[in-house]
Image (tube, rainbow, N blue to C red; front, top):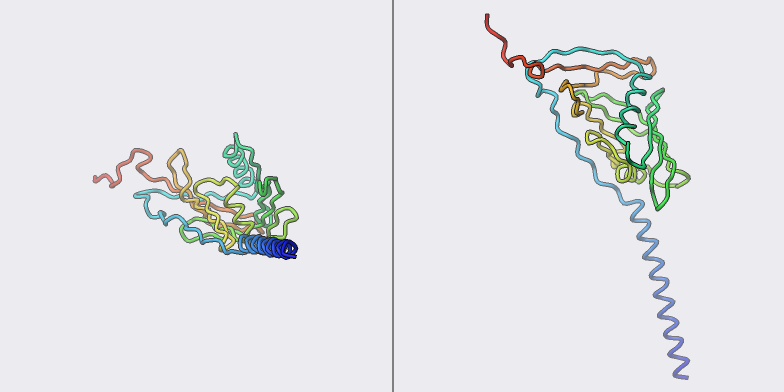
Length: 210
């Protein structure tokens, strides 16, 4: 009788332990999926740090920016196994593959662009999907931030479901500065401000007195 009682007690301990483990795993998954991500910090505004300069407005089209963006992305991803591209039409569509859970899943994110006062750009997420996974939008954005390589001047903010594109921080070999002037995708009207600091041309910062 004592042996049987001991076996029953052991069985109860193992059963309770198994139930507790399952509950802990489920709670861990729930917390992992639904825990809110931290807010991202955007770069400081450096739009007034050009000194004496001249400004030019360049107007272009969605197709030109689409081609230029994807040429840059191809070069940025060269030598990696990552793959994504942009399609700029009625919105800005990011299409690619995201390595998650030891596999690769198709990623699709649609953004609406908003030009900032300093010439940078915010892309606000309008729709997002990661394969057939039913995950919160913020969690997919968090995976995008964690697993998809981005240029240093691009900040993914999962908490606000947006991407900050610090155009003014782009490293351009000519040392010219670029700001977004306006973006109207419906009318295919995109304009950029090109700022040419005099110092990049070897011109003195102060005007020459006559």
